Amino acid sequence: MNTQSRPSQVAPVENRVAAIEAVFEQRGMEPKPFIETMTHAAEEEWVPRNGGRVVAKAWTDPAFRQRLFANGKDAVAELGLSMPAHHRHLVALENTETVHNVIVCTLCSCTAFTIIGLPPDWYKDLDYRARGPRVTHGAAGNGPRSAARNRDPRLGYDGRYPLHGDPGPTAGDRRLA
Image 1 (tube, rainbow, N blue to C red):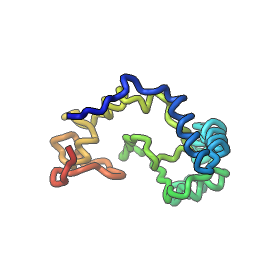
Image 2: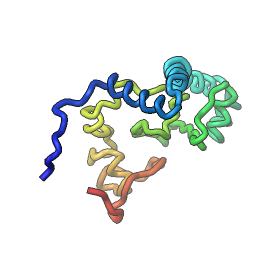
Image 3: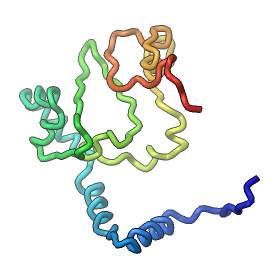
């Protein structure tokens, strides 16, 4: 039995941030300049219009469009857009008459925030995220998530469209409870 008492309430986020900043400062670190730099980047530089510029350029410049499909990271650099060093690739996909791409993204650290902007606050809300993806495919209606995981036509994946990225664990993978 745990005899330690637990606080009945969690401190407001502002108090927690101030406490973390104080610890950094006590250890000789200066968090404020970093916070100011990152806040400016998130609010002024990493905005959805960057992605709009990329798409508009691809629609109006066939040579850029081909470069975007060949190497997205290099192509967006032509527009003055950069990506973090840990982003080794930027993959651009195109819908056609026979290929329709659906991206089900959790907006984790691999997401190109510098190109598409940060997610809205509601997107990271636990209640919203707990609902999971709501995309259906095929008559079974179980969605690409389970279909891609199992690549099973009975689950709505009919093989007509390519599956991009990690399809998630397969039936043979171990899962953590």
